[in-house]
Each structure stands twice: as structure tokens, then as C-alpha cells.
Length: 342
Image (cartoon, rainbow, N blue to C red; front, side, top):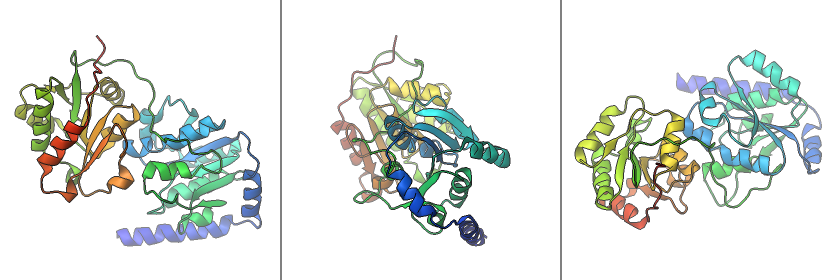
């Protein structure tokens, strides 16, 4: 069934590419982009995952830094992630497709970026980007068949598979990529759980097969407590039992109360270290500038991780000594003296 659905989407994209084809459009787009000037730009990213939304922020920041007026079309659930982001002039929700599309077309954006993936064509995003920019230049990944809908199909950046770098690459014709590229998140008010030095330990994750066993987080929590750092164990919906297991393994650990995304961001922003799986809180910790130790299972670290100082991405798929790898990563990371206000 999934295979038939995929074939139907690919066929739909090909049909839309044919219907939307205009002679000379790509040549005109290249000529338009040759003139460097501020533009009204719409970025399209329609999925509903926190990490995916945060991985888009380097592109938004690069466009804003280049002087463009940046708009973003995203899934309604992602308003909580990107509302109030400093790069955005306006955040649009993909809630009423026809009404939203009419409103977007009326904006007459000068450039539209389909912020999809290269590995798997995001057909819906490509079609929406094409229809939302009738008079503008439409850019997006140069893959089949989504690339057929683009005025400027953008090839992947050479020398890296990093997802957030490749997304920023989509706007390279409009904004030079700053170095270094970093994720970002809006300012948040303080949220205090414990006084003094603490580290956030988050054993959860959306997909169970990507979670490291809680025993490993318990070991890490004890190692942090031995260094005079209070482990604060955070958890998301349905993850309370995981937090309880870590706290049972480390008597010094403190179970955080239920938090929303903004409270979690504040808690992480003020701590000295975040330890987590490869999941949304990992990207959030990196976005607020917290030193992060992220544990990866069965996922490509080079693509989805943030393997640069002060962060440590630990690939546990390549070792039988899980506890040793985590212990070494914590030892290599110098904990800051950051503490919750008050």
C-alpha cells in the first residue's frame, strides 16, 4: 500500500510539473537571481516534527542576515517551535490548504524555497512551493520528480551530508552561507527546577528503536552527580516511566515537572550540559547553545547530528562498550558553571 501511495505521489508531481511548465522560466529565474537585492521570501516546510523545524533555522537566519523579508509556511503544530523566531516577518500555517494557498499567492513572493530533503522527494512541499510562487523564483532540491517543479533545482552541497547545512544550501543563491552555521531558538523566560549547577538528562524520544536503554542514562546521571552536578531528568508525553527509571538508578537525580517546549528550552539554556537521545530535545539543546552529548542508535550521525564543539555526538551503533563510550564523552566535555537563575 505504501509503495502504491509513493508511486501515486511521484506521478502527481510529474503531472504538476508538466502543467506548470512555462517556456523560458528557468532562464528568467537565473537572470533574476543574478541581481543581488533584498526580496520577500517564502520558505516551505510542512512536516510536524520539532527537530525538523529547528533544522530549518540556519536557512531562516541566513536569509534574514542577507536583508530579505522572510516568511515561513509550516505545519500548524510547529507554531510552538517557530513562533517568535527573530528571522521571521510572518509565520503561516498550512491549515486550510485552498484558503492558505490563495492568501500566499496574493503576497506575490519574489522567491519561494521548497525546504525539502534530497534523499526522499517531498512531493507535497514541492507542489505547494510551485503554486505559492506564481510570479517568483522557486528553488528546491534537484531530485526527481520534485526538481522538475523548481525554477532553480539546487544540487546538494559537496563535502557534507549534514541536514541543516544542506537546507541552508537551498537559499545559497539568495544568501551566502555564514560560517559557522548554527541552529537557533527564540529567547525564553527563566524556568527554575533546582538551584546551583545542574545538567539536563532526557532519556526519551519519539521513536523507541532510537532510544538508548535507561540504564545507560542512569549510569551517566550517577557520573554527573559524582562531579557535583545535579541531574535534572526531563520527559515528554508518555515518557514519565523512563524518567522514573533514571531517577531510581541515581538517588541524586531530580525528576523535572511536566514542561512545555518553551519551559524545556529555558531549562536547557541555563544548564551546563544536556544528555539525550537523537531526538527533538537534542536539536533544541543545540539551538539554545547548551553543550550537548547526544546518543545515536541506528541513525546517521553525520547527517542528523551536530558534531562540533562544544557538542559530542556518540555513535553507539559502532561499539559494544556503550557505557564506556558514554562515560568517555562526558569526561571529554568540560561542564560550564551555568546554573538556573535564582
